[in-house]
Amino acid sequence: MIKGLYSAFTALEAGWRYQDVLANNIANVTTPGFKRELAAQQAFQDVLISRQAPVPSPLSARIQDVVGQIGTGTFIAEFATDFSAGAFQATGNELDIALERGFLAVQDPAGQVFYTRDGRLGRDAAGDLVTSHGYYILNQDGGHIRLPGEPVAVEPDGTITQRGQQIDALQVVDFAPGQLARAGEGYFTAAAPGEPVSAGARQGYLEASNSNMVEELTTLLAVQRTFQANQTILSKLDSTLAIAAGQLGTVGGTA
Image 1: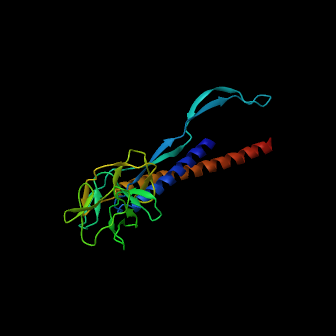
Image 2: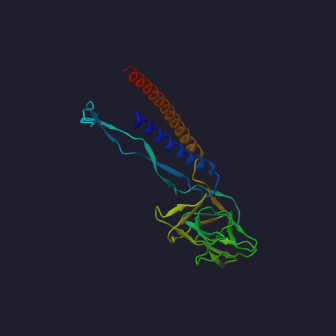
Image 3: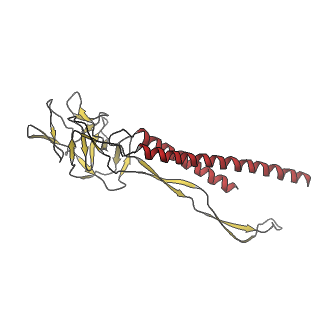
């Protein structure tokens, strides 16, 4: 019965953590370039159950035979990011960029490099190309991209031109699975630089979040029902243990 309590508790903990992930996915359904998280649940190793003979004298339990196995609950093995592409949405904005492949290399004011597919770009007061969070967009040499005041064109390969003359080029890189670590909504870090790729950049478009509201809500409801069921199980087991402890105490007192 104690193992039953443990199994119910681990299921509650897994459900609680999964609900947090799903809530974050739902909150970012409209965030351009957002990549949803998935939770991989895994069972703890089963425990072998044995039947025991009455305790002999001196007090040393003697195992008689094997009864079977009992599960000891579940846990979240890992949170994995789904890097599948979201739908492209036309905005008509000059500095909105959607990438068919790879990630934009960006740098925060402190100098740390991140990678993102959030293509909501713009000019800051100095004319530098920045993200919606104010991070600098990096060029292929790792420097900042400074734009003129007049409109520019972004070619499919990431080259930025004005009146047919190249001004600069976006640094677009890709990574092998497992190399990126989540660092905020829509931003990732990597231990090593990525591989330069042809961006397939589309000016005037944004990539939508790959989080689907209907799917996330359906999963959230299922997780919540499982969470509630395990709450009920935990409560029932606790009540049963309380009754058993009371009866054992009575029997012991009578004897």
